[in-house]
Image (cartoon, rainbow, N blue to C red; front, top):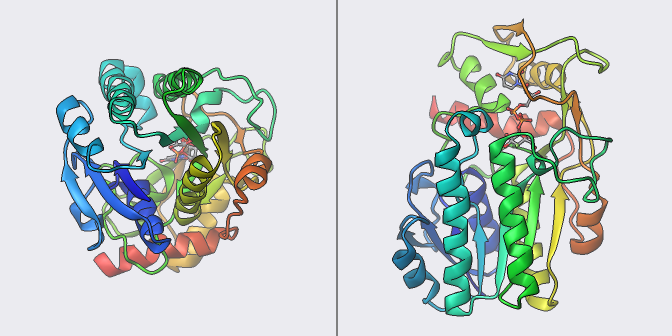
Length: 323
Ligand code: UFG
């Protein structure tokens, strides 16, 4: 099976590329390198440099005997999406519709789409399963929900079948060190901790210690990127084997607080980190963990990384190698 990984030079996409190659898929990566890095591309991967806003480039790529698409090309900074929705509308919505249309035009049937727990908005109950209402509270989450809805229509209209994978908090790097490109201008907790650990940043802040959680800091469901990658290959196989479409959560079901992450990072790194407590960040729920049963049931997906220190070790190994 030949797979076009759109956004395959990025953080999650490059791990998906690696997993696909390891399972014997033929892989082409389509990426504009706006946030991804060419060093993430493995030698067996064919690289097509192009933008999802370029319909001709997409058509050309889809015409190269593609059997399935994994689409991970998106802007993903929640805060920025509230300040510049136009950028998110264009990239995440127009760009994704271009992909669906190029697929339909070229008879490419299967798409695995990077969605997000952000589609649920403020959790009404925990853990959040797939039956939870879709009520995004930021524009980024809305763009993901909008594309899920379009894929549902395209699927009902017989154009394609899809898997929407709703990621919880992606962390870690491939344990064998083969993916080495770090994210540019990272906004998430783990890379920020790493910047503080390596002196690139003087200190960081924990946003809020007055939440209704055991240590007062927010609880999230951190899932290793190699486990996420594995779910993509399982989903592609499912799409190819059965004519189904589905949306599933990708999380471990286990919650870890920000303070627990920071403590675990200090342990792995072997030194105290410079941080303080700052006020809550707008839009952060106290607890967000996944109801993870459906991915297991539908795909047989089972995360292998359950230990936070082991996950952080994979990030720290990369930092040490590069500093
Ligand atoms: N945090 C800090 N300090 C920081 C950065 C983050 O305390 O400097 C805290 C946040 O307040 C939050 C936790 O660390 O409690 C995790 O924050 P991230 O920004 O790493 O991740 P989020 O949970 O906010 O967001 C992630 C993805 C989004 C997705 C969202 C919902 O990055 O794309 O999960 O699933 F929308």
